[in-house]
Length: 74
Image 1 (cartoon, rainbow, N blue to C red):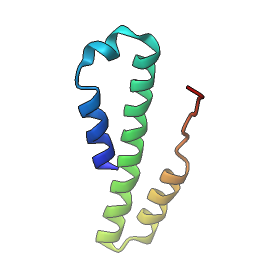
Image 2 (cartoon, helix red, strand yellow; image 1 turned 90 degrees about the vertical axis):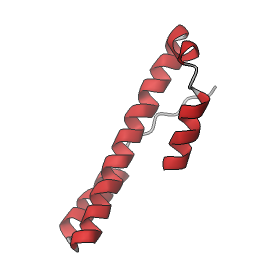
Image 3 (cartoon, rainbow, N blue to C red; image 1 turned 60 degrees about the vertical axis):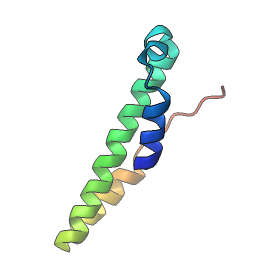
Image 4 (tube, helix red, strand yellow; image 1 turned 30 degrees about the horizontal axis):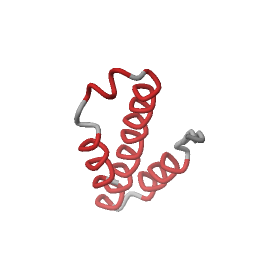
């Protein structure tokens, strides 16, 4: 997950591309939102395992499984 986000950020480092095209800008916003949601869920799971807290693990897993990914044909 982290290496995928690093690759994405490297690829979009030239922010001019993202800022010029409204559809790319919207996609970029969705990707960053998705990344935050995934990171939050994985952090919750990691903390749960570290604290041996089954409820925290389950909450993280539930958050991860509830993440909605929009798909479109390019």
